[in-house]
Image (cartoon, rainbow, N blue to C red; front, side, top):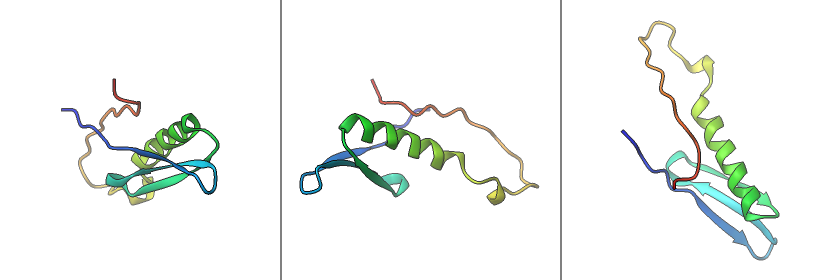
Length: 74
């Protein structure tokens, strides 16, 4: 199974820097000087969000681990 995650990159012309948002994950960030830096920061933010917090895990639940790759689609 594969899914495509929408990432929006945009230039704040007034501030002169790049920002990103990932609507499905409610991630917003940026303030970088280049689009490429905003893209890399966004990929890192998505990976961090998908890691989760072990304190939120149910130790009694059955688990299934998934390999998830965070990279731009071809």
